[in-house]
Image (cartoon, rainbow, N blue to C red; front, top):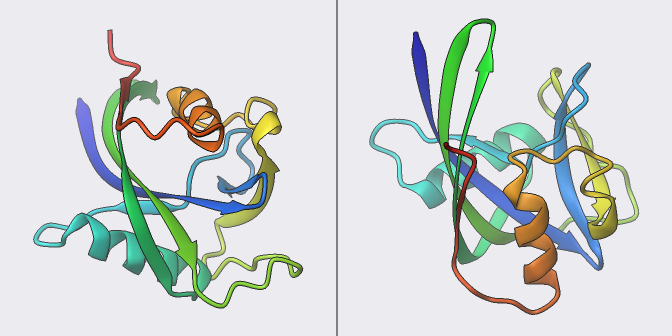
Length: 146
């Protein structure tokens, strides 16, 4: 059995830090965002997901690109396409911890140098975010597919 996921994700910077999400009890992190619903634009989905997850409004600034990934979990193959945007959260207080509106999620700031330590998935995002922060504004297209 195979499952397909179409995802909208945000890269949100706070100086040299990037906002990451984690499902409680898991050892990997991912960029905030989530599934795009049928009939919903990518940007609308991203804004909705951030509002559902954090109760905050999002400014989408620019399209960074796409990262395709696959993995196996519980005997089921998963394939996802992540559309990734640079974004900013309106009225975000960077000095206060972010509180999730969803019980299964938690949020953390990670320095760009700690993306490996925080096990950011899909793996190509670590390199792409590092390159972007260093000034490389190339459109992203990466994958983990074989």
